[in-house]
Image (cartoon, rainbow, N blue to C red):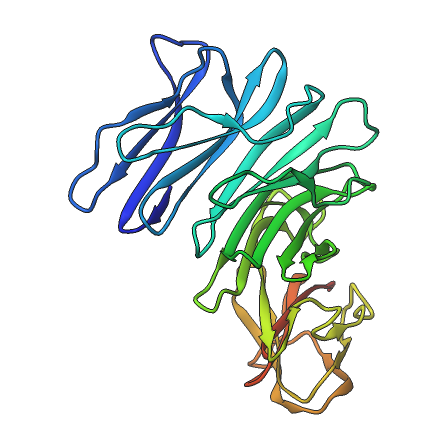
Length: 353
């Protein structure tokens, strides 16, 4: 589903009587009064939809659809739009070299109507997995596709993109590193070009995937994904990270450049644990312990602190002074100033009775 210009569009895949073995792509939209009848946008006549599709709507309410199509064993990326009367014939926007498997595209429209598309691509015969590719439509032509992720791991998948302006484009994806661990990565395009990719999630979480990104009203991105705080755990949780503007410079709120929490010790622990962290500037700091349900257990500190290293301890009791039961808990540190905004980091600690 996507909205823009007062219109809401939805797309979905379904099989039909005419094509019972292959999916077709349908669309419908709400014009402010009624839902218009569904339209069969893509039929699997010669090119079969296979590998994902995504929709974006510009400020005029015009929808733009990218989708994966399979033809003679090759998967490629196609684009179509609704011109007010009908959906135009799809065009291929990736390089038609016949040697790649391209899938799961995503599209975003920036403030001046330019289109930005990313997808996962794999060249047959290469030793690595998928990489993330990008192309832009400037109103006249599609740019040549470029690879924006580093293809030196086991694969980068399911990229998502958001464009506030032509020079404020963010891409996120979930990837698998050489050890088989899932992580969330991002790159940004601005007036200086594409940045190096950066890991957003913590090494303390596991199976991080299904990532989404959106811009707030200040054009700063927020990223959410699914993951687990326990390795191999069946239960999954929702995590987020955000980008903070700090005057002229902007920094991602990660432990590397916001503040640093060292490895807690001992862990697991029985009676008390030492928590060490370092602040890059004078901040209002709050350190809170939560259980795995997200319920507050103990506020350790809530005060203004100077820049530099700090150490506090938790004696495994709650706010009422009662000992907490054995299990895993979340230690969350938040630091905030009027100039820098809010930074946060979360670590897992384990109590053993």
